[in-house]
Image (cartoon, rainbow, N blue to C red):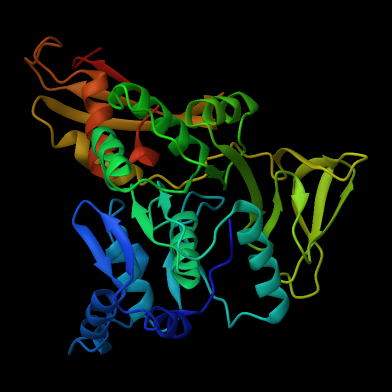
Length: 373
């Protein structure tokens, strides 16, 4: 996770340097820098702009499956303050307020880009929704560096694989659950043309070693694990601290001082530092279950499932899970007189949520029951 920065003016100037360059490829086609700036200009000068200056404006006003081009328009046409969907103690969303980048912050971010192989001209595919911090900061960072983006976040599994074959990336990023989903999708829909992706970047949540090995083997690429927090910014890549980051372990808890903490030392998560300097994260400091790195929108999931024929009620609840620390179970009650043979099946409902709301919102399990049971 990387702090949100007030960079809309600087990004617009950066994008304007090469108007003919393709900045984004998605299911709608290619978007050039000039086309993006034209749309930003139109949005920023709408007559009702003043009326939109409310606490609810920004990314939280977008749907969870908003296309990345819509997210970029919102980001670049704003005044630098964006509402980002981010997990907190009660499952809500918080607003991040950041000022201009300092020289030391730029040095940390430059070191991050160097280590993961993000450079101008290198195509970067993102599976993380742009309304979440991970997806947004990946998009803004790529835009600043001049790295063309490929938006996978709003596509079905088959569409993601098809787009990756049309626009092969040099880098792929997402949270572990997104990367695992893409791995399964390529096995199912890739046919005899498995994808080859030189760099795969996992962030936001802990990356299991087994998944890391599977990703490296299947895509024949190098897998990077990026660790950081909202308050501290990026901390490590593959367990090695970034430039300007100072980490220490005390009583099993990691403490960090970075260019983003304004001289303060902050507690991050539970972990240790090996004798060779490698940082190992073992658990969240607050003891809470990991949300899989993303904040699902449970209300949207429930509304989507309830809207399907033959479904009377939907209840979502969280239970412990091995894959991401916790998982969601959707308990679906069928309408009276609807047999389980005629109702949509659990996997059909999970696929529906994936296609409509993205992989981060897919329940770990769907359980069907009849009224009165």
